[in-house]
Length: 226
Image (tube, rainbow, N blue to C red; front, top):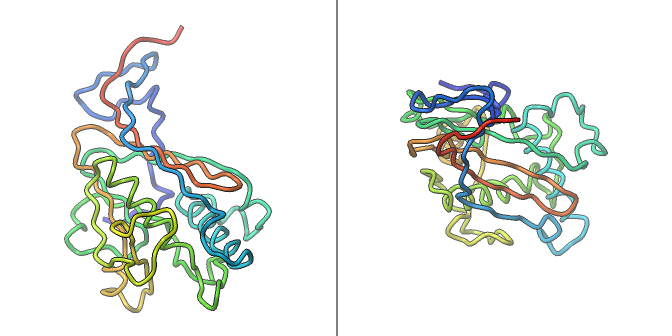
């Protein structure tokens, strides 16, 4: 089952019960525990300043597609480069894929993905002769944060042909998407599955110089608002 990021339930954890085991009224607050907290420096993607800027732009654009508001920005780079933040919540058993080409074994699961082809037609910049450079950086970073948070991570093609600054090589993830090459695209994707018993929320914060990811687990509800 393939749904885009526009279909994500952006759960307001302070008011919305996710699991039947939790009975949360509107006045209750979620009990959340941090599972990982990582920061990626956007100023350190490449030694050449101009090339580095292209990496940063493509990373920001991808995250806007993941958020679901990229079409509204109409390739306005001034707006794309402004700081922004958003949250995505995976209920137990749900999967986040980096792009639309999903492995057959996951199609009986609820799979979300960013609705983007990662190419020039979606606004990505050509960097050092290739379109979309930078998406492997953010995928590798997301792999690292998700792995440390305890999600089940599937990345069949490692980015071992080149290091990703700020990310250990074991998390390196090669990303490729072409609708006409489905098998290659499926294998060069990133899949994050919540195999825990509770909802996991991935919090993204994109600033002028970095991307921050915090993954929290909702372990219960308590108290009330005054």
